[in-house]
Every structure is written in C-alpha cells, then in structure tokens.
Image (cartoon, rainbow over all chains, first blue to last red; front, side, top):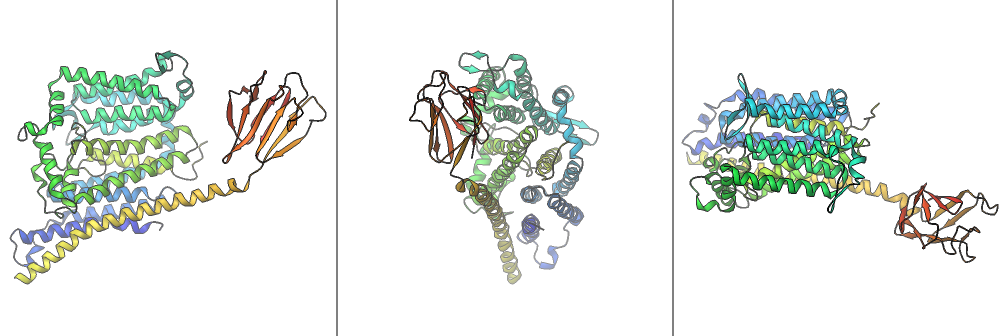
Length: 425
Length: 150
C-alpha cells in the first residue's frame, strides 16, 4: 500500500503511550513487575483494534479510489496523540474517545460512499443556508449551558454541539452560493467610498452569516465558534472573489460588533482583561490561561516526558486546553510537530482545491482545509495567549464526539474531492 | 528490587522519547513525500515551456489579398502598422503607422498598443496598454483579424 508506512506512526504512538502509562504505575508505588499488569482496565483494547482495522480499511479504500493517500495518516496521527494524552489526563475518557474515533471513521466511510448524493446538496444553496440558521439557532432557544457556553443540545443520554455540524453546512452553503454568484460579486460596479461592492441583495446572505456569528457570540457566549464562523465566511468570500473590499467590510462590521459587545457584556470585558494582563488575577479569572502558560514554560524544548508533567492543574485540559498539555509533556518539538501536521494538512487541502475543475468543488475543498487550520489557529492562539481565549476544540486532538465526527466528515469531503475519476454529469 | 526499577525506568524513558521521535519521523516523512510530489509536478509542467520559444501569428480574416492566409513566425518581437518599417504591414486607413507590437517577456508574450488611433482588439475587447497573450487569442487591427499561437 502506498504510504503504508506512515500508518504505523499513529499506532506506535498509542501503544507506546499506553505502555508508558502502565510503567508509570511503578513510580506510584507498585513494587513488582508482575503486579504492573494487574488492575489495568483492558476494556479499551477491542475499540483500539476496531479503530486500527477501520483505518487500514479506509486507507485501502482511499488508495483504490485514487484519492489523496496522505490525509488520513495526518488525521490519525493527530487523533492518536490526542487520545493517548486524554488517556493520560482522564483515564476514564480514553475508551469513550476511541469509541468516538470508531464512529467518526465509520461516518467518514459513509461520506466517501455516498459522496455523489451529498454533492447534490450543493445545488440548493438557500435550503442549506436556512438549515444552517436553524441548526445554529436551536441552541439559542433550547440550549443547555455546559462549561460556560450555551451551545449544547441535550438529546436523552447524549449531548451534541450543533455548531460543530453547522460549520460543515455553512461550508456547503458558502461554496454553493459564492460560486453561483461569482460573476456578480467579482464584477462589482457600485462603489461605496473606496469599496467596490456588489448590489446589496447579493451581499445580504453573507451579512446574514456574519450577523449570525455575532448573535452566537452574544447569546450563547460561544466566542470560539463565532470567530470561526465569521473567519470562514470572510476567507471563503475572499477566495471566491479576490476582492479585498469584502474583507474590509467584514472587518469593519466585526470591529463595530466587537466594540459594542465589549461595552454591553461583562463576559467579553473579562476575556479581554485576561488577555491583556493575566497576572492581575492569576488565581481567579485568569487561572486557566496562567496555568496553561506555566505548562508551556515547564515543558521546555524536549518536554517533561509523556505522563510526567502536571497538566492536571489546568481546568478543561482534555478538551480546549489539550494543546497546553501536549506542549508540557512533548515539549516545544512535539507542539511544533502538531502545528506542522495542521499546516501540511492545509497545504494538501489547497492542492486538492487547485486540482478541482468545478469551482464549487474547489471552493468547498479550500474551505474545508482552511476551516481546519483556522480552528487550530484560534484555539492554539487562545491557549498561548496570542488572542483572547476562545473555547473551541483542537481538531482531531481534543476530547469530544461532535468535534471528532465533524472533523472526520470534513476529512471525508476533502478525500472525496481528491478522487481522480470525479466526472460529474 | 532496584534492578526491575531501573529496567522499568529505562523502558519508560525509551518509550517516551520513542513517541516523540516517532512523531518527528512521521512529520519529516510526510513533508518529504509532499515536497517530492510538488517537485515532480514542476518538472512535468516546465518541460514543454522551455522547448517552445517561437510564436506564430496567423491571419484569419483580411481584405487585402497579400495578407490572406499568411503566417508570421517570430521569436522575440513582431510589429504591426501601416508604415513600411513594420514586420506586418497593413495598408488600411484605420491602422496607425506604428500600431501595435507583440514581444517576449520571460516565458510569455505581451501585446502592446503603441498609441494607435483606432485601438487594438484582443478577443473583441479594446486593449488598454499592454496585456499577456495566451495561445488562441484573437487580435484585430483595423479590419484584419489575427490568431496568436505558440
């Protein structure tokens, strides 16, 4: 199998991580080697085997369909780092994470299998737009507040984060809408001061998306997803039209919204205050960020070694702040490699987009790739205090079913778009 | 028990660094595979461009019998106009003495209007200053239509 060797890395990382965690018990007071294996909860093994089998099958499928063979190894490596780190941070979540990984891989197989039908969704941009508004609006009405933002839907035993799936629909909507109206938006005639813009009725859907992002931010206190949605809308518009006027318009819109919400809402002021000077209140409001910065400092270049840092001090370390834990235990080198994985993934995605003949497919592929990079950037920037802290998941790495499944759907879309015999009737 | 302790510690350290190095190995392998692919594609794209250093302008439509069906091959520059010093002489009243020129710039050819009265048309659009030409573009000067090929 082409690039089959790359598939060994994720498996190796997971197995080595599990062995390290078992050996670590020695330090915790277990005296004899034989006792080490006692009391280990092996219930994750079937799931690990299932993930391995599914991923080998998927890679085989991708190679046979002449799709891009490098995407899946990148995603799996990131997922393996994530799940092993979760197993170290919260051992009880290791098995659920592997289970979600299984589900995500199965969903990805379905995306590949039914891509022809899914692609037809692109023919109905307005329905997609409305679906997006409804999905994002649901938590505003019926949402439950978990971890400070009201963006969860509780459905019986599971809780779902609809914005994770809303972002995929928004990608479809933007790709379909922008490529349908590319001509109008690009050859914009009417002028507003120095801006060249299309007539209002063609920009209105875009303004709706921006407004929706701001609303999410205000009502659900979900700063991260709002930033993500807004950013992806701006990026896609720029990629489709090449007109900087829209970017300028969007940024001024964003600036005004940011200033107004800063003046009106306390939680926004708190976020900005933490960002500007976390040391004014290191044990209170800024505790999370300060602990994360300490984790980065402790890690140094080579890290404290897997399992031997103290990332447990950071609240929410297994979801939003997992990057701080990785930076502490894997050091600067591990953290940089994780970032490089995202960058290479993005590069690969852009290359897929450039090869697409259809402008909708090209926009969709470029959107998937940049969404992933943007999401990774926003959360890494938040964790390292480069931007005000925004709670979203690190794609493929963080704990969370919704996040994993939606990331693998995006991966499936990219892989399906990279298939060579992709002639659309 | 110190022996097992040391062995276990050794195994653990090896595994810890092993994970990190495995990640490093993965990323370098990945980057190398991707760069190699890009380089191969560059080579495939470059080859035809280097060999073709000549362009041809074919007359598609002309009133003048001496121009009909003519092909003008050139490498660096070709000039159009009513004046006798031009490479392609078009004896029409609508054509300026020095009307337009096509010249090579790097791997591409550029058409430039030399300030003519009645403008040069590329694919039906009046030419503003200079523009890059692509194979198959139609150029109209006065009543004569040329096709640019390379």
